[in-house]
Image 1: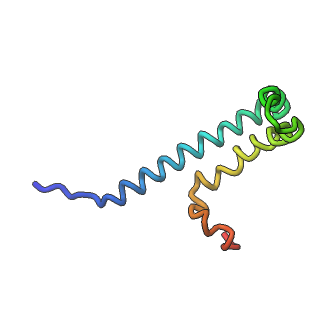
Image 2: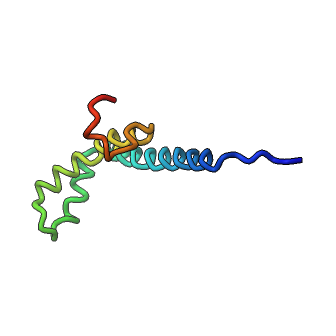
Length: 95
């Protein structure tokens, strides 16, 4: 009785999809939880950690307001597999 061997690239593509979905959901849920808790409380809790850095506090505060939104929205196309080749992304104008 001989077993049929699956092509190795089929296993690699399955592993790629699994890792892309897992990483995408992880980052997306980080953003969603921070949105649920509130952007203000998230930003206020992290601004003191950047006090000893050369960054102005207003830049840190603004970035921390935008970060959860980016985490929640920007990762969804990554999770779904859109725009996998980011090197040629600016050259393409349509989806």
